[in-house]
Image 1 (cartoon, helix red, strand yellow):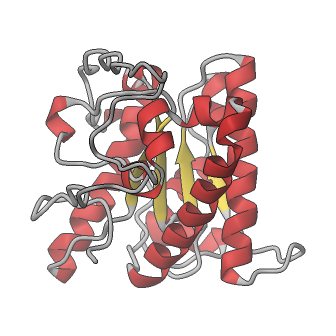
Image 2 (cartoon, rainbow, N blue to C red; image 1 turned 180 degrees about the vertical axis):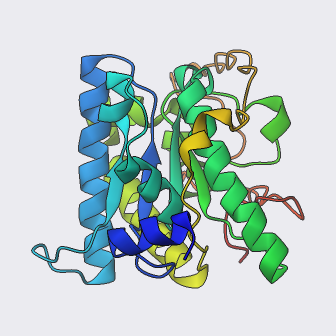
Length: 257
């Protein structure tokens, strides 16, 4: 048994029994960090409900690394195992996120697992989900990757999850987004059995997924009504055209219809 297998065995996790999702976020300030924790806990509750898992069930649901990142400590075995056994990777994206070395390595570690899955199975696993915390461009070298919120919630895609959580007028949009996202996470975790691969002590030698932060997102134009001028959606908020699913790229974003 190699060192990775021993680590997975000690955790009691296999390819089919790891945590459902790993949430990656770059710390910002106390208020925003608390908002991300609230989102994480709500998402865990929804995923648990979709899976039919009882509240008292000890099976892990999600993992949030924000506390460890804030401490600036070396990666613990627990964090490395969580990153190497999670079924889905959720990146809460912001300019700060794409400037973070630790977040870049988290992303790269999971992307390497998806690349290995594609090499061994001949198909891609759409298990890496970026969500916009603030309106943010994905770095140029990852421009084939689409934000998951682009299809699940136009409001979250246009304004960012932070703004949607802050405004009372977006309360329904937030609830719908979390519910739909939980469904997608559970569906993806069930359909794509990405094998575990725990990052070893050389984690800090991994190349960063985004060494050069993208330029700032342009400020959207406003109509006279004050609503964002976005031609992707109709008056009912639904997309007028299907989103770009990534085609034949390495990491397509969503399940094809």
